[in-house]
Image (cartoon, rainbow, N blue to C red; front, side, top):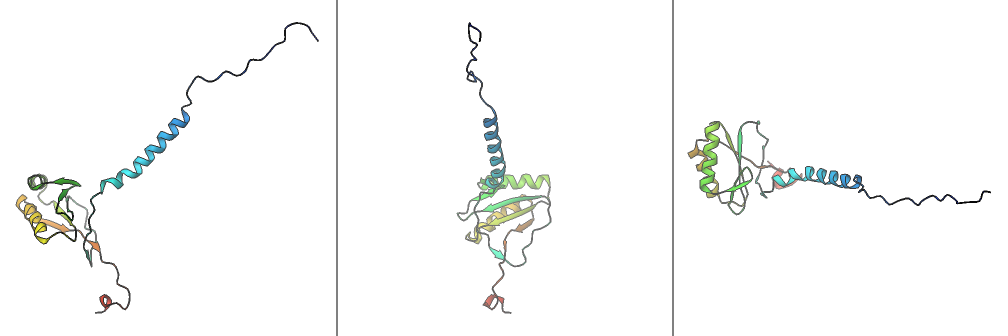
Length: 149
């Protein structure tokens, strides 16, 4: 054994840098959540569409989506509009393509007169193709009055 000073190892020093890995992981999870929920927020107009037999999606083409909620408020492309703005949007669509189809979605509780007003605005703007959007009819249980001829 030698006399003299003994070498001592120093204790590990604390890190002075921020560990970025957990921060990046949290941010990536948040981005994925926003990507998944963004399309769900786009269709936020709540409508109780009427049901009808023989409803099938039409051929994709140039169309403008018009919706009327239970309170009678009109939406074009998901945005609420008043009468003047509705007429302007419909005229703009007719100017771009005269064969544009108006896809009209009206709540089952909307008075018929309100639907006719929107149809009249479409005709006045020069749009004569109107498609009524409805939910498919649910199959009636066997033996019920709806399933008998």
